[in-house]
Image (tube, rainbow, N blue to C red; front, side, top):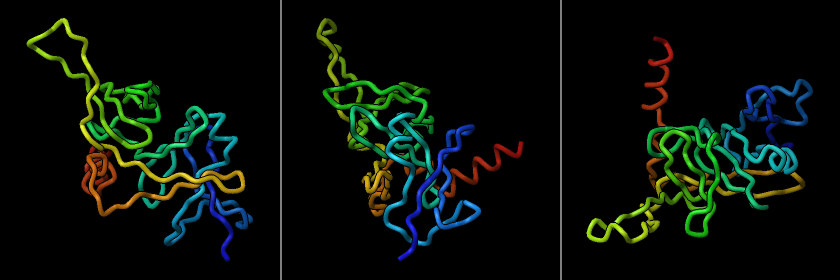
Length: 179
């Protein structure tokens, strides 16, 4: 059986690098088809409250909030904002990440987007929170032996946030960075 893969937090960049503890040089390694990838220790993630990682060329963020680990695509479904920089707020009894760019609210557990509806016929009525449906891809998180593991969700179902992991987006970003 292969040694477990896990990630080490780069303190300077805040990015997790995939590591293999049996590799004497501790050089980042790429696994072919593991189902769950270690993204850090429970203690590291609890302390930092959130970490980013790359799993199978997909940027994700892992949050620790009120004793629960959550994982989702790093870039906001709306315009690609970095969700790891957002604040967590309670919306309709659910913990939600608030995108730092445009204040979009996304449920940590489900990826559901929320907005406040206003009744134009009754402007004095309090706005209420409504769902846009699932917009952000979330991923499964498990903990074994003090390591937090993430398993990517079913890629057969498409979500708006998938664009920011697509080849089209990555090629566009490479062109922008060259200028």
